[in-house]
Image 1 (cartoon, protein in one colour):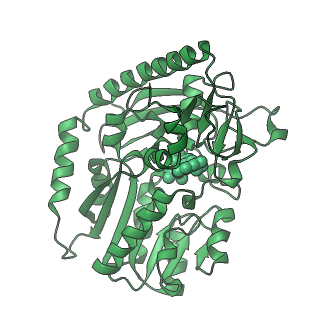
Image 2 (cartoon, rainbow, N blue to C red):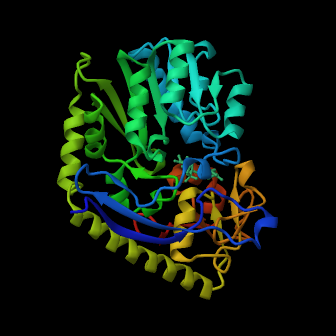
Length: 395
Ligand code: JHZ
């Protein structure tokens, strides 16, 4: 019997972070059929046909973790916890992006691994030791030779982007001290299902992890989770604190309570995922109806924050320029380009003017609080936002 069961079809999707330049608009864009499935054996949820890392993570990568105050703040808080509790002499970050996490530590203590050389360069330029490499046994061995064993390995929103999880943990095993700690942070499958955030699935996000899925992989490599924090970030993420089995750190009760929560919600059962898929197809219809209704009233809707996630929504729901004439975004590398697949222009963020805009569609819904704070004026003048989560609605 096949152990991998598809449950959701998100249709033909372009590369989620491949913002198009003007001259590329007439070229045929490559699309990939995006389906999501559940492995009934190890309980992992993943996309069906992951693309090669080289296609997605290369020198043209536009995402910058420093573009959100929420992310910067979250890294700051975590680094204080790390310094106080674990006192690491050497820290390695897998997927260090533009250095927003590493910046919280002294340069002589850190090593960053980042395959997208355009963002890796940013971190290197400010004096941090970084390697423009994919995380694998080869780079782990190279670092072991140069720097010795590592006390703490951190990775946020990266492991879920790597298909071969065995390679991930075998590589960690090469470098991590016996009493070392691994901290991983990725969107939570439980929150994704509760909030109907199907846009957590796009070609970069190969997995959306649950604790029970992660534990099945860790077991194979002699690791275990000893603490778990539920974070608000990225629409609900889990931060897993991991140690080698046999290392005498006590297991925190948060592990058992998270496991029970996931099992109670049904994350071990295929029927839970089929029910989620039904909600997703309904959500698509509702969002389309909402856009249609506002369009009929001649309302102006712009996009706010263009994200890999919004690529999934726009292409799955077939929402294009006819509904959203343009997106606004603060990331330089996305500006003056066009959204993948739907080809909506992206302009530099310049504030929301209620005289010109009625509604803003939240592509970056995961930073809603930060955005609402920034857009107090627009809101006080009667400006409204549109979101698709947990249900398509106006807020
Ligand atoms: P944001 C990326 O996903 C890709 P995306 C990646 N695969 C991943 O896992 C997550 O990040 C972590 C803009 N913005 O973070 C900035 C504003 O314009 O949700 C960003 O372009 N104004 C690695 O693409 C975008 O929104 C604002 O006030 O889904 C947010 O992108 C704020 C707060 C953001 O990542």
